[in-house]
Amino acid sequence: MIEVTGIKEIIKPENLVYKKTKIMTDNTLSYCPGCGHGTAHRILAEVIDEEGLQSQTIGVSPVGCSVLLYNYLDVDIQQAAHGRAPAVATAIKRLLPDKFVFTYQGDGDLAAIGTAETIHACNRGENILIIFINNGIYGMTGGQMAPTTLPGMKSSTSPYGRDVKTMGNPLKMTDIVATLPGTYYVTRQSVHTPANVRKTKKAIRKAVQYQKLDKGACFIEIVSNCPSGWKMTPVQSNKWMEETMFPYYPLGDLKTPEE
Amino acid sequence: MKKELRLMKGNEAVAEAAIRAGADGYFGYPITPQSEILEYLMEANPAETTGMVVLQAESEVAAINMVYGGAACGKKVMTSSSSPGISLKQEGISYIAGAELPCLIVNVVRGGPGLGTIQPAQSDYFQSVKGGGHGDYHLIVLAPASVQEMADFVDLGFDLAFKYRNPVLILSDGAIGQMMEKVYLSQQKERSKVFPDWATTGKPATRERNIITSLDLDPNGMEMHNHKLQAKYNEIREKEVRYEEFQCEDAEYLLVAYGTSARVCQKAVQLLREKGLKVGLLRPVTLFPFPTKRINDLSGQVKGILSVEMSAGQMVEDVLLAVNGKVPVKHFGRMGGIVPTPEEVVENLKSKIIGG
Ligand SMILES: Cc1ncc(C[n+]2csc(CCOP(=O)(O)OP(=O)(O)O)c2C)c(N)n1
Ligand code: SF4
Ligand SMILES: [Mg+2]
Image (cartoon, rainbow over all chains, first blue to last red; front, side, top):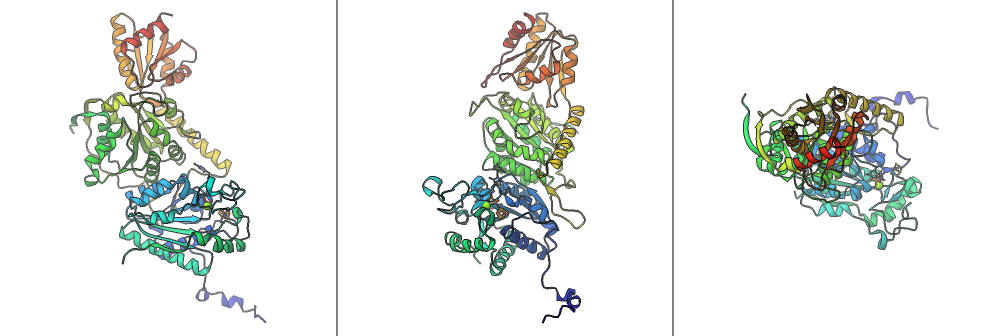
């Protein structure tokens, strides 16, 4: 039998093993249950907190489900036009070179409408961090096909499945930017298990350190889920992501700095 | 202190004035007839002197969004382009207006529509003064008529932009951008070291986080924001109207023209006066806010007004609103990159206004 009467004695600062990072605000997240965006926010906030970067950080939020990032992270944030976050971040970093500058973008934002800004900011070697949430779909607008949507995958604008002959092939932006001399660190991660959360957090922490070196753009893709857009439960969506997304978008580093 | 005198193209004057105004950043993309602005800045390399950032962007879309990012840091930033490129910037300009960011945009207008021509035109008037992008907003629009004003309006533009937290547009054209005139340049200003309190510069413990956004999902909040913007535009209408009058005191007929057209009209006034006709010229210097009241006053004095533009007739609509039916108002313009001659203006004033 569990002894519950002594619970008050257990709730003490020295027994604390998990708490909300102070960089996350108290605002209720607007994400659907089980969505990866919330987890990605959380670990980004943790790194900013643990690295003592709150006063040094300027973030750029996209147009997409994470447009309201500024409601959730307690740092200075600019909300950018759809796809333009890398251009916005370019100017911020050029004008305030000592600050930590990141963008947080979905796959529609980064790999469709913002393809040019993404490639050129990376190619110029802008000293920024780009966090790329690839959920293979336009979450915010109701589950339309994204450039990253897998062949045969159903969405509201590919109701019979993505036909690559007429709708094109999924775009691997992370592979593309890894080929550019302007990128310094390019990796693909996920946040669907505690182990993957730890790896992604480590990647963000590395990118923070690399930004101080002034060596070029860091690019972290997080392959993520969209239970609502995929019409799955959170558990189903994570399983589907492992089975279907990962073979196409394999996790791991694509470019690491030569030590 | 004595000002420095130089012979310069209008485009070069903008670039030099930007450095001297203490601008923090310029983001642009080549397009004729304004590429000299970017070229001049690259050659001058102010990164070495004032520390100003100059960047050739991958497109006008990227350039205006760089302006958004820089302006949101409280920096003095600008971009320039010509008509097709300004069309591409419109979404970004709307965001800048919505987020109430100060910045300077220069349009060295060429003839359109489409790829059009590289010759001067004034056919972007509607786009400039009525909004241009989506939503209810206004830019402050300055219309230079000389190389001197190309230089002067950079400083003035930045001042107005920061005073009202509003984008300012210099609406020039290919003639003023390309022509050479003498210009008095002002002294080098220091780049500002202080940031406005709303700027995103990294959140210290002493203040709340700064958020730059044009989004409010709550329509009530969005309507409130629109009311605030409209109140600002009304204040601008009240305080910032600028115009120049040329021989209006005894005028029986009035020409209204801005920029290059105003220069042509000044000559036309001279020709008409030589023939004994009492004609004056009102040159709006600000197109938004428009000198509505002054034109209305003058319409009580004159018998008719000719609005002269290098377009199919855009500003004439604002002249008509100002005159409100008191006297006849007609339009004369050339299109597609053609600058009218003073003789054509004389003829058209006679046939459309005086002769009728
Ligand atoms: C210029 C413009 N075009 C289209 C839209 C509509 N829109 C909003 S979000 C979005 C797609 C977002 O998808 P993604 O970037 O994948 O983000 P997610 O919601 O999946 O995280 C689109 C097309 C817009 N806001 N602006
Ligand atoms: S629509 Fe998809 S991406 Fe957006 S919050 Fe819901 S689950 Fe997440
Ligand atoms: Mg998406």
